[in-house]
Amino acid sequence: MAVEQHSGHRKSMLGAPIDDLTLSEVVDSVKSAICSGRRLQHVALNTAKLVNMRKDPLLQRDVVESDIVSPDGMGIVWGARLLGIPLRERVTGVDMMLELLALCDREGFRPFILGAAPDVLQQACAVIEARYPRLTIAGSHHGYFSEAETGEVVAKIRDAKADMLFVAMSTPRKEEFMHRYRDELGVPFLMGVGGTVDVIAGVVRRAPRWMQQSGLEWLYRTLQEPRRMWKRYLTTNAAFAWLMLQALLSPRPRTVHT
Image (cartoon, rainbow, N blue to C red; front, side, top):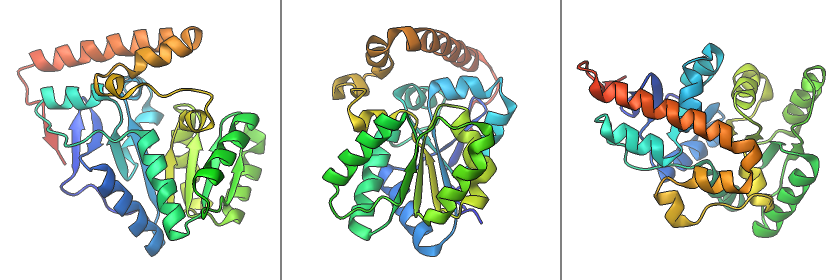
């Protein structure tokens, strides 16, 4: 059974849901869900995901039916404020995963990490165990498994009896996996973390704080992986800018609360 998080917090921006919760409020919700045994699914929303939701009905469903949707990316925060939606805080996937790992360290919760390449995952787990000495990783599995192997992966996660599941796969694969199997996994808290495991492992460097605050993380990431990232950011950033322009010029009400 999902934890009800929408009342009073959920907003709508360009057809995408956003929950106006701070990082500390999300962490408190996660702790409450684990202690009560209720399932809580989290999704981080950035401009690329918002754009792709508009042409991918399954991704739209997977995000809308998540329990908490956090604004990940300054583009979302700035865009929401321009449209009259005063979000209090940006909640990045990296910051949230690190806070939750610290929570595991303090409370004895056990995370399972799914995704990334095998060597990257192994390195990330080593870093986590060194950084959080009281934390026990319930299990891990790389993200390079086939559709035929999915059942075995689901069973491995369920048998691990983890308190949290971090899914380090790309969009829309991670959202689809969580939505499809969230009631079979037996894990109270599920979260898609994308490339955060690569950051923890040290394979990808995080942008300096000033670039994060200036909304330039996409540029920093593109400079690190130009062949893979330039087209994605060019197309989605342009599409997001166009959506924002249309919304700002529209005479219809731009803010919808549910």
